[in-house]
Every structure is written in C-alpha cells, then in structure tokens.
Image 1 (spheres, rainbow, N blue to C red):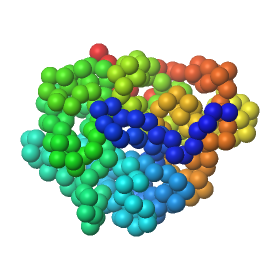
Image 2 (image 1 turned 120 degrees about the vertical axis):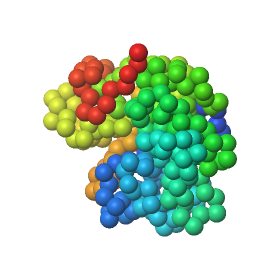
Image 3 (image 1 turned 90 degrees about the vertical axis):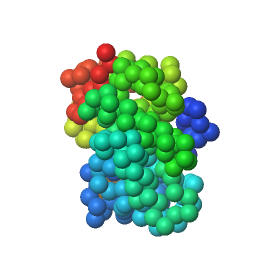
Image 4 (image 1 turned 180 degrees about the vertical axis):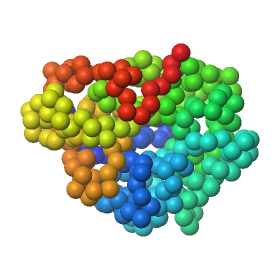
Amino acid sequence: MSSRSLKDALPLINSSLSIPQLGFGVWQSPQDVCEQSCINALKLGYRHIDTAQGYHNEAEVGRAIANSGLPRSDIFVTTKIAEPAGSVDASYEKCLESVRKLNPGGKDVYVDLFLVHTPNKGAEARKEKWLALERLHKEGKARTIGVSNYGIKHIEEMKEYATTWPPAVNQIELHPWHQQREIVDYCQKKGIVIEAYCPIVRNQKAEDETLVGVAKRCGKTPNQVLIRYCLQKGWVPLPKSDNPDRIRANADLYDFDISEEDMKKLDGLDQGAEGSICMTVENH
C-alpha cells in the first residue's frame, strides 16, 4: 500500500506554498450550517477549504476558521471571483472584500489561493479579473492565484497580459465519467495543479456496476473510491457534504489502494463531454 495521509500536499508552481491534496468544498452549503460543517471538517483533520463569492458563504467559512482553535497558517483557504466588476480597480475591491470576510478580525488578512471562477463573459472580463488577482497577489493578500473551468485556449491567452503565468491551479470537473484528458495533460506538463470538483458526481453514479465492483473489492463505499481515484491520479478532490458522518467518511481514504487493474476499469468509464454534470472546458 502506498504511503498516503490526510496531511499530503502538492507543491504550487512559482510559490513556496503547498496545497493540501484533500479539500473540503462548501458549494451550496447553507449559511446556517456552513460554519459548523467547516468546523467539523477541521476537527477531523481537513486543512483545505474551498469557497467562492458565488457560494454566498465566505463569511461563514471565515467564522469557522476564526473559531476552529487552529492557527490561521495551518488552514489553506481558497475563494473565487466569478463576475467582473467593470474595472480592474473595482474587481480588486470586490476580491478584497472576500479576503476580509475570510479573515474576520485577523491580523494577517489573506487567502491562500484566489481563482478566476469561470472564463465566461469574454476575454476582457478574464483579463480584468486576472489583473485584479495579480494585484492582490503582489500585496500578499492572495498568496497564490489560479483559474477554474479554463481550457487550453484560455490559459494560453493569459500570456498576452499576465505577469504571473502559468496559473498555480486549474479547478475543473473531474471524475471517471468526465476525465477531460486534454486539459489535464496540458496542465500537468505546465506544472499547474489540477483540482477536481464534483469528484463524487453528486452521488449520481453510486450504483454504477463497475464502481460498485471496485468498491466491494476495496471494502469501501463508492464515494470513497471516487475520491481515492482522484488522489491516486494526483488531483486535488473537493468533496462537499454537510452531513457529519459523510464528512468523516470522505476523509477515510488512507487505509486502502485502488489496484492498477481497477484504476484502468474506472478510466474506461470516460464518456467525454457526455459525462459532464456541470461544465466541460473549451480547449480550442
């Protein structure tokens, strides 16, 4: 069995930082439960929380961090800007507001990773958001910066205006049915860390015959196998739950390996764009 643990982290390009390989997602985590869910996750050993402006729960994540009893430096926090504000200055201020929400009353006000959430709205919007993030990064308010849902063409386009390139991270939908191999291969060659959202396919594939068979052989649940699959691929999975038992189960991944044979079976489930439940990147 390979030596892995919840403390595993991956180095980020152009940075001295490493990102914890297992993240805790809070998409659609309601404001009245999000803080406690994050505290539960941190108590179990998670050290990476992924939120976004569009999730409308940055303040709750910030309170959880403040009330966790852990040093701020022990927790890796990611957020994202989705909509441009109309100018680099305005988008910068919008992002600075997120940083403040995530560090209530903190002396050191920063996020560990700030992402452009989507390439939508066109090239000028992408440029505006990235330049705002570069300003945050230069000031130390965003320790690293990256992108989400970007295809090859979007990352290559950044060379026209980016001072910081390549982005440290690209967060995309990834699971056996939607492997997006072209962008994954590109990012791996460039040293860009791949984050996998929807790693458990929102529980839509829990009864898939191939997956169930692998889970039985591993003595684990289908969802645990899907998250472990991401870890063995070298991705950063971001499972989300507000159920304390599932939060615990989603981190119980380090006492088994998926065999090479079963990894190949899971690889064989890829359906290309048809397998997406959220978004396929545009590469060309």
